Image (cartoon, rainbow, N blue to C red; front, side):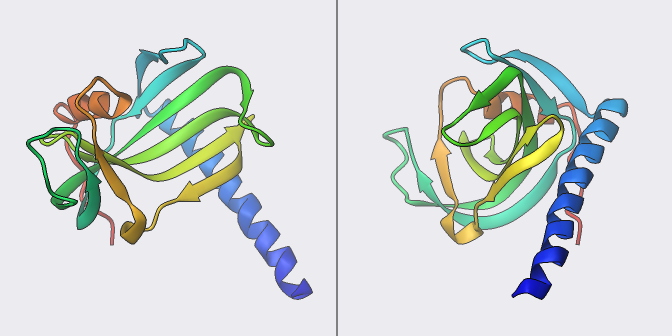
Length: 164
């Protein structure tokens, strides 16, 4: 097991460096759009201008009484948003000042699900979590949300083809 620790450490550090470099590069290219403040006014919200597509069938949780299914199938958009906190926050033992979330969006039916989240502190990844397709829950949200803002932005930004 000891021989795998060092390469794994380099892999994790490389991923953190890559994430930070991509965020700096994305800002320089104008890939992020400032979308305002969070409801509790502790962070600035940025929306990613690049979108891709993903097909699939996922578990769903409808909000509308008109929707009765427990699965949703279709071609979905994949979008990204970023919360940049004014001061680092803590959720127990983890401290971070930025949250990047990759979202699966069904804009027409108002279903949204989180594919991946990365928490950063001073530009370095401190935690990353992802959801396997089999575990993803698409929740119908009819009220205003960051995901809905991504849907609005997607109407003006062309979807990018999914990379192989």
